[in-house]
Image (cartoon, rainbow, N blue to C red; front, side, top):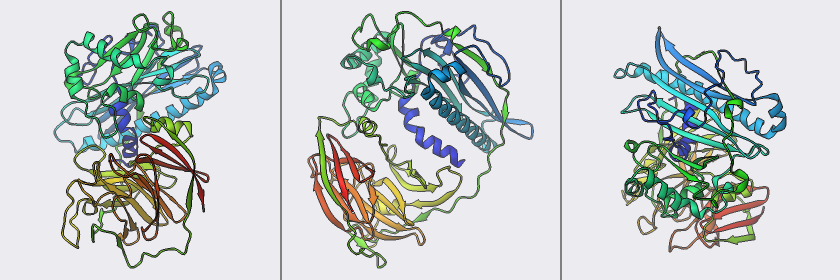
Length: 546
């Protein structure tokens, strides 16, 4: 698999699985054979101009350019596709400079991702002796609203790279034109409590009997709300638009029901739910989008099938014991341990970690992720989504793989001391490299009683692939950890179990401090000399003293 496409796929997996959606307004049969949606069903742009070439000079406020792509070898078309480019007129670039900047980023991401994917999928098609019709990966877009309150891009994506059937999904991005920020759904709602029952009511009205399958399709994880429609608002994973009819919610196959169920849509009308959406975002009448949006086609871009460089062989790491372990090379540095002083504590019933990060200008992290130097991609998935027992580490552009590790023995055993295996599958929660040492957090989702020798941090020498240390268990089960100076900042906690922040020596793995907190720490972020910690119900801030 082409490395850059792994990066794009890993980052966007959650978006595709949980943020995707498809409308059933004006359903059509897509080129993938699935019941999908025509963009014209969302906004009537039938009189928009169509022309070839890349000349996008227009009197329209916004132009959507469709860029076809093709990859062939020896006269055979292996993969085709397309991506959209959004072009604001000079007048609107000047009026909305922040929006223009983010639209440029949107265009760059689309261009890079599409050409990389088509090139990669073409190389896959060369090896596919069963399906000979060629692969495809298309994305189209339309502007379904543009005013001072919302700039909404509605995308339809469809792809086939072998398998039982193509995949398709739709996704809407709602920008605040003045700030250029992407708006969360909860920011435009006046009374969010009306949303959940409204969706259920309208789904059952549009698709009688559907709620039985929808409710059986949802399996909440630890800490998630039992009502998936409440959880989706917390996670900001709805696909939505607002027009003169009201709030439109779209669900793609696999999002809340099976693939066979197809695309689902509900409209929470302003007449039936007048207090749902803030007045500023409502429309009294339809927009004349045909006079706002122009459509044009660019020339087809030809790309060659990708050729990957050989990757390093995957290295295994031995598991000497399930207890604390320190190799002979591990040493304790001479007293350079930091201390933490609590400066703020804000408790709530539930802390939305994404809202917490946004409020503090931070980023949430988990595997898969990247830092300033490396991209960390989980591999060897076991049991359920994102439970990786292997890790591949690349440069941030995914051009070169530096390291590949199979950590299944560290995760599940056996160990050399007792030849004992773990009672449950353990997996990699997070990883980072500091000074040619790979630090990895390993644990499981469950109680300590399920496997008490879990939730620990290991350090691996990247020159020898040997274990430097294995911390004591039950010190780390958050979505990430941080290393500051010679200290690992991590945390452990679970329902009915003690909740602590732990400070470990990063050279030996020895625990030297424990700070009691209200609930299990999930996110650690450092900005300057301040440590920000998000737990299930409390946001903390600590001053770091070096």
